[in-house]
Amino acid sequence: MESYYPEEVSRRSRFARQAGVPLSFDSKGTGVSLECGVSVRMFLSFSDVEISEARFVSNGCGWAVAAADVIAECVSGAALKDLHALEGLERRVLSELGEVPAGRRQCIRIGLEALRKALADRRASIAEEWSGEKALICTCFGISEETIEDLSAAGTAATVEDVGRLCGAGTGCGSCQMLIREIVES
Ligand code: FES
Image (cartoon, rainbow, N blue to C red; front, side):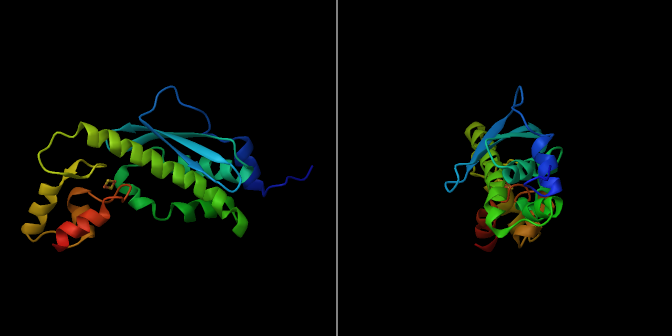
């Protein structure tokens, strides 16, 4: 019987290796499409500054499930510094799944949104535990405002990229890059 989905999407949606709720996890996030009601919930487990495992559940169509499986597979075992603000992850999904019709791109973004929210959930719990005196700027790597100011004052960090190279800040989820830019440019 001919599948409704392209081969790789069909295979991944039926045998998604990363599907299922883990027994324990450190953070979670949900992406939802208001257009079709599909949701993806992503669960992340961390080992220091590495995502040891990502798993997901979804009520979605084959596209959403296959994309979430690729995303979870890509970030499982990845060091935060290698996430590069999630740039390129959507491209990676597209290259794994083959040609994705324009109307199905939103199915892929549900998984990406779930991942972003799971990373935000992790940042929120780290920020809650932060006891440093100066503001915590990069929660992925526990880098304070003071550290970035020191790097900037020493003349070793003039850009967001310099800061990332020197201490990792900004190279994980990327959500702190705007704050780092403000500090190095001020
Ligand atoms: S908070 Fe994630 S890279 Fe800085």
